[in-house]
Length: 93
Image 1 (cartoon, rainbow, N blue to C red):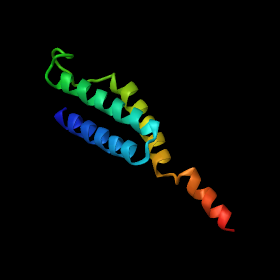
Image 2 (cartoon, one colour):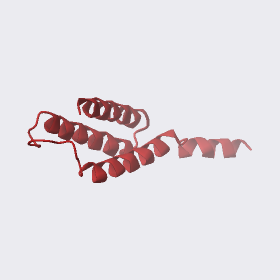
Image 3 (tube, rainbow, N blue to C red):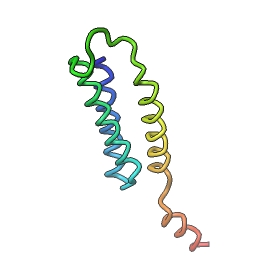
């Protein structure tokens, strides 16, 4: 489970860098969601939110699709060229 915490923190950092790089609100939202998920996983790891066997995690059926969707949207928007750059190229024609 600690691996999930590390992966979530790395994803939060990548989304935070994408937000700082492009200023996209979707990347900021993804960074916050990944950080919250990392905190949640850490609390499960130290058994604060989970007592006994935490092997079967139904909560992940909701968390992972939401995280993946928000991350995909943020990455797509972050890699898209800015609208002003495409307009400048049209003006040169």
